[in-house]
Length: 96
Image (cartoon, rainbow, N blue to C red; front, side, top):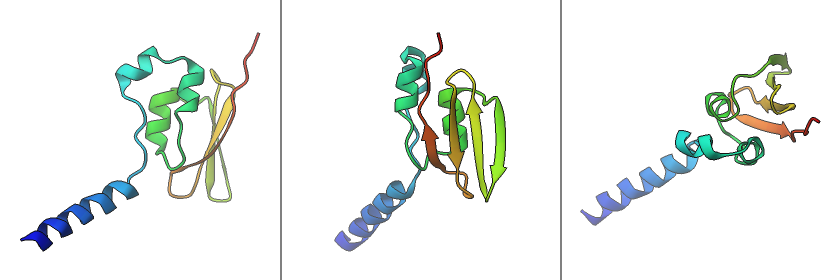
């Protein structure tokens, strides 16, 4: 019985460690500034999660199996790998 519980626990931990980050809740996002939203991005987030946090991208570019999105309200760019996981993001700029 102990082995079964241990096996289930290990299986759950392995599964949760492999899951992409989900980011803040919608309620938390409502209170965040755009820079706080930008700061909460994490590598391996899905495109859906990033769009939920930053909003709809203004443009999309595909190259070498990766996809880059530009978010106009942030003046920034995110790049996703061929598996659709967040690979890199470039800091936003403040406009005056």
